[in-house]
Amino acid sequence: MTLTDWPRSAAEPDPDSASPAAASGTPKPVSQTPGTVSETAAFVSETESGTGTKPSPARLTGTQKWTAGAIVAAALALAGIGLYLSFEHVAQFAFTKLRFGSLGKGQLFAVGVDVGIMVMIAVDLLMAWLKRPISWIRYPVWLLTGATVVLNAASGAPAGAWKLLDYVAAGAHGVVPVLFITVVELGRTAIDRVVRPEQAERDSIPWLRWVLAPVATARIFRRMRLWGVTSYPEMIRRDQELIAYEQWLKRKYNGDISEASEDELLPMKMAPYGYTVEQALAMPDEQEQAAQEREEEAERRRLAAETRSEIAKAESEAERLRAKGRVELVQAEVDGQTGQARAHARAQVSAAERAAELEQQALDNAVVAEARAREAEAERKAAQERRAAAAADLEKAELERKAAEQRKAAAEADKVAAAEAGAIETERIALARRTAAAADLEAAELEHQAAQKRKEAAEADRVAEAEAQAIETQAIAEARQAAAEADRRAAETEKAAAETRRAAAEADRKKAEEERLKASALADIARSQKEAAEAERAAAETRQAAAEIERRAVEIEDAAKLTPRERAVRKVARMAFAAGAVFVGLEADGIHRELCRAVSIAHVQREFDVSSTDTASKYRQEAAALIADGYRPQQ
Image 1 (cartoon, rainbow, N blue to C red):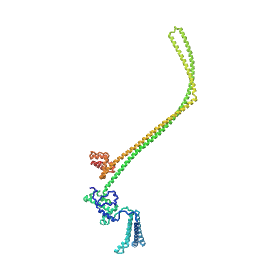
Image 2 (cartoon, rainbow, N blue to C red):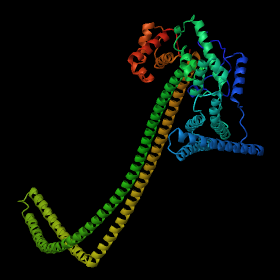
Image 3 (cartoon, rainbow, N blue to C red):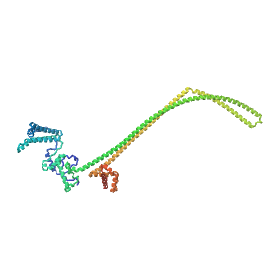
Image 4 (cartoon, one colour):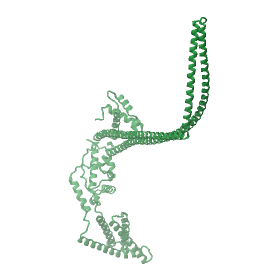
């Protein structure tokens, strides 16, 4: 038999009664007792309280309005009668007995007391009508009314010894004030029930119980008033349950309740604070469950913080990649614009260089033309000199020809002489002479040809000089300069066009390169986003799997009704298995060492928010013992 399996003998709970706010949400009592007790209590409660459970209609009918008006008129008449009777007696008594000095002052005292009572009653009724009642204002009204009753009774007291009729007379003087305050309280309660029909009614305790059990009844009254229990049957049921539970403990421990545990004694300790037996017995489990929920909430917050941190890291990495892609895109655009500007600059520089080159070429052409003119002049002078030399050569050739003719004549003469002196010259000498004559003849012929060629060269030089003079005129020079300028401009245009085409081709290439870099950057961003999403999905699946394992473990632990310490020990064991610890084939010491290797004391302290290393070490020792007994997370 478990702790909560104790005999029930109390009455059924009243469904309309409210439990203390501190123990709300507890399981419904399951006590089963004879219905006669509850029915009798309910009957007595209803009889004594004089109220039903159904609220009255919000609006009054015509008859009810007339009745309410008549009641108010009668109450006002009663108030007027009471004030009239009380005024004269209290004023006279205040003048004669209370030493007010004069009858006028005594009358003012009586008027002040009555007016004060009426003002406070009017304020009390008005605030009750406005659903804002002032509870403490009733007590000064009761005090002043009691003072009025005492003064009225004292005004009718005899001067000498008291007789029975004197007591009746003194009491008669206080009847009207008591009746008036009773009517006022009745009216206030009626107004409160009309304007606040949903307010729970408080049952009254039967007067017979006050007579038969005053001490126990006073205890019940105190608990009803302190802890807001409005149902008298509910309070009786709680008291009966407590008595039955105490008797059960006595039977369990042979009359010595001191042997019971702290949890078993909770109903007796918590009864003065409005707790039922069920609520008191459920307190440890509820507190442990609340502590476990706080730990789970802290764990959820920690996991949520880790998840947010991972998401922030992934978003930061994606943002970094996107920023890198944008930087590369901007760099590509800047490089393209810079390349295009450089191409234009190079084209302009090339054009300027070409213009300078053409200008230098034109200048060189002018210098060359001038040099050619000077050279032609020099050649003309040289031609003149060559003509003079040719003329000299011609004269020399003529002289040589004449000499040759003379030598030929001499040779003929020699020949004749040789013929004449044939006996003297030998054949060798003749041959030598003939050879020498042939050589001389050939030399003369060559001299003649050279002279002829020199003459022709001199003529050619003269013709060339004439042609050079004819060509090298100013018009020809200007024409050549214009042609050179046209060639330069055409060359510049062609070069500029070529540079433009090359710059356009370079710009197109840069643009294509920029497009490629942009596409690559976008692809990198998309890939990084996809990788971040995949990482987030994998992390979410991992967290979901871990949460599912933890949830199943918690459900199993809830079903086993484990204590918080047992839950913590099992969680340490699960942490060891999750860390990859292997306990197969190990003894108790080996299991403890393997668990200590997998789960550190700092990890246990951080996981369970404990500052004591001894507590964390004990958690690990108990977890090792639990694993040695065969515990596995699937169990």
